Amino acid sequence: SYELTQPPSVSVSPGQTARITCSGDALPKKYVYWYQQKSGQAPVLVIYEDSKRPSGIPERFSGSSSGTMATLTISGAQVEDEADYYCYSTDTSGRGVFGGGTKLTVL
Amino acid sequence: QVQLVESGGGVVQPGRSLRLSCAASGFTFNTYGMHWVRQAPGKGLEWVAVIWYDGSNKYYVDSVKGRFTISRDNSKNTLYLQMNSLRAEDTAVYYCARDGMVGITPTLDYWGQGTLVTVSS
Image (cartoon, rainbow over the protein chains, first blue to last red):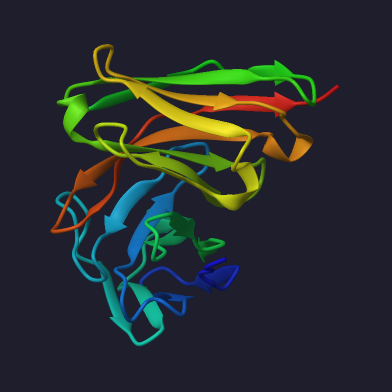
């Protein structure tokens, strides 16, 4: 089955740049989406189609994708960005798949 | 505004069945695909199933194939997940989510708040 691989945790100080990676064999042919999930809340879409930002998402959130690796970048991370982040894509038959999630700590 | 409200969760014994519902409002339900996603306690998100806007196609994660059935009633703006032969590993919060066109391709753009299913004897 198709898998997306993320690091379990990333830690930065406030104001630093946080980078969270997501790797998968099908990423050269498939878009990646990024979701932020804060404790006890439903996920929120922060990046779609590799690098686009939905309305209402701060400009410090950006995304990129090259080959089999996608990256979510938070430039000047804030304490309120502390959350779990998940990459998401689909396999060739249209089924969804999430990465294992990355816990971002900002302190 | 888009609203998705799940219901039907609870405690159920292994091997038994449960049906979850997701009531949708604030958008034209019969023009959107819909997903179920689950999250076991302290674990990550797991995609479970998707159904096309008209119910013509359905896809499942391997671990629930043959046990879970996703369906919808467009006249009632409601999405369902029939869960049979439940196992302890099905214990999770179950979210419904809309398959919306944020860009040129659809993705899960709106989510409900989830309903907890606990499988335990």
